[in-house]
Every structure is written in structure tokens, then in C-alpha cells.
Length: 473
Image (tube, rainbow, N blue to C red; front, side):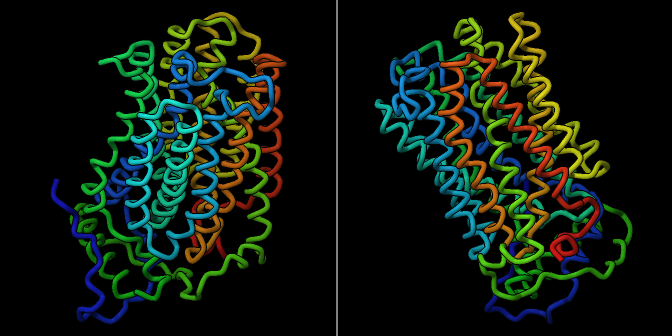
């Protein structure tokens, strides 16, 4: 595939006078192949990010089988237990989202997208060859920093490249591609974890395969433009206009008729960003709402997604069969985003989040009471569908609530709460599993989903069919 000529020109070369209306020009773009190709290229980077994120669950039984970790520990903070591996993953994600993700507001979406993908690919490869729990935890934490930055950067990137009438569907498509990594890693774990090809533990092969994402980094990077909204916010309006000229030319050629005229819209302010701005109206209420939301959604979402095989083992299923059942459950991951593509721009974003959280609570409570393999897999699929729809909804939602100048920083800040929560949820799930079995685990998950519904349902603003800067004002 030939490179798309989307890169901005050298700022030192002569440029045409800045053209106003960057937001208006983006929001009038129809859904052509060029627009969807931009989403696809970003989602490919996200595929490796999700592979890395979700192999935490599927290599867990292999880590226990190899003797590196124990399933549970006597103490709450047992660093030789599997909960510590899960916690190290989310500790890195917390650092990445809270401390580093804001660099995308300073250095641009494209540069940070590339660097973070390389970062976690290299760190994950090193982790694959460690043999002690402390060293695996350390390199898992380092890799998690890169994954955390990548998550925020991709969400920010997608929201800024898409017109307002496509944002929901675009995020659903990104998640469709990203979540296809989950059945891939589940299949590889089912196949490789019980074995030791060439004398190397199967879980190591699963990790190594995911680390190969660095190979495709430069191919993806060449075909991506910088965010025109970010360029305009930086005062680089000539570059933003040049990038949009190239996009519009391709879109118009594919559309087969003149593009719709731009409708006047609020444009990105070129004022300097400050973290303090997050605590000023209207962003303060939004930030608090999303902090509460992320605190509880991570317990519910990752409490199941990161522990599927281990929860099945706790219900008496063998390791081999638990990985097989987990693979069947994992196959359903892309179907939630596929459904999201049909409804994401038709149903209000906050409503989608609330209904998805309700599904996790109801189906999770039923899962805890089942012993039949068929019912475990069916309810596992329904929990997964609800979880992926929740993910589609909130990833789009939290990027819409803040202005371009602080979008990456604000999203990284509120999203970091989910990483902090998920880090401790590893210990919480292990503790609940040890003392209250799977019933206690899903009681914790259901209570968390109730808090998700309350926070977003009562305090979240509406965002559908509004431009980004209209929402931020």
C-alpha cells in the first residue's frame, strides 16, 4: 500500500496563509475509505497494545505452572503471587497514563504514538527472558508505562481525526480491531502454555510473539498524519491546513462530489495549557465524575478480563480446559465493538456506558453460581460483550470532555485512576478468591458496576453529535 501524503510540510519552507475553520473542515468530512483508513492504521498499533494488555490473564496459569508465581498468597500484598504480576502491569499503566501521557500534548500525537509502541515492545521482549518473580514484575511495570501512554495517545488521536458524526463508530471500529487481539492471545496461550517448544516455557512464547509489534511501527507511522486539531492548537495553522488539504483531496476524489460546506464551529484555542485548568469549571465536575468512574470500572472490567482462566480453575476446571473455555469466551471480544459500530452514534454515550455496566453486574452474578461448562462459557461471553461495549463507550466519552490543548493530559489523569484501581484490584480479587471464592469476586465486581452507573448516569454530560470544542465549552 502506498504511503498517504499526510505529513505536514517543513515549517521552515514557504507556506500559504493559514486557513480558518480546522474543526469545521474536519466535522464535514463524509465516511470515505480515506477516513476509515486513518482509523484502521491507528487501530493496528492498538492491536499490539491490547495483546500486551490482555496476555496478563492468559499467561497467568503458565506462570503458576512454571513455579514462578503462586495463585494466591497468605498476605494481602503477596509479591510472589499472581496478583503481584497483575499489579505490576497496572502500576506501569498508572505511571504511563498519569505521568507520561501528557507528553502527547507537547510533542504531538504522532511522535508519542510511535515512541510508546517501541517502548513497550522492547520492554516486553526483555521480560520474556526473566526467570524470577521480582524481575518479571519489574519489566512488566516498565512495559506497562509504554502501554499506558499508547492507550491515551490512540484515544486522543482518533477523537481529533474523526468528524463528530463518526466518533462513536470510529471508536467502535478501533476496538473491533484491538479486541481481535484477545482471541489471538487466548488461542496462542491455549496452544503454547501447556507446552515448552524448544525448551522454552510456553508462556514466554506468548509474550515474545506480542513483542514483535515493533516491526510494524515504522510502516504505520509513515502513513499517519499529525492531528490537524493539535497543530492548530499549537498555532501551526498553515501545517494543519496543509494536512487537511491532503485529506480533503483524497476524500473528495472518493466521495465523487464536492464536499459539504463547512459549518461554523468553535475552533481550538491557541492558549497555553495548564494542569490547573482541569480543576476549573466546567472541567472540574467532569474530572471528578471520570475519576470516580475509572476507579470502579477497572475493578469490574479487569476483575473478570484479567482473571478468566484463574477463576475457571478456582471453579474446578483444569488448566488445559480453563484455557480452552477462556479461548471460547475470548472469541466474543470483537462482537461487542461490532455491535457498537451499529449503535454508538445512535445511542447517547452515557446511556451506553450505564447499560453495559448493568450487563456486567447481572451476568457476573449469574456466572458465580454456575458449574456447567456451557453456562460458564455463555455467561462469560455475555460479560465480555458487556465489557467491550463499556470500553467502546467510555474510551470515546472521556476524550470528548476536555479541550484539545489539555486532552491527552486530562484523559491521562482521569484514566490513571483506573490503572491505580486495577493495580490494587489484582490483590483484591486474589484476596476475595482465597476467602470468599468466586461468589465474593463477583459481589465485588457487581458493587463496582453500581458505582459506575451512578457516577455516569447522574453526573455525566451528553456528548453525541456535538463537535469536540462545543463539548469543551
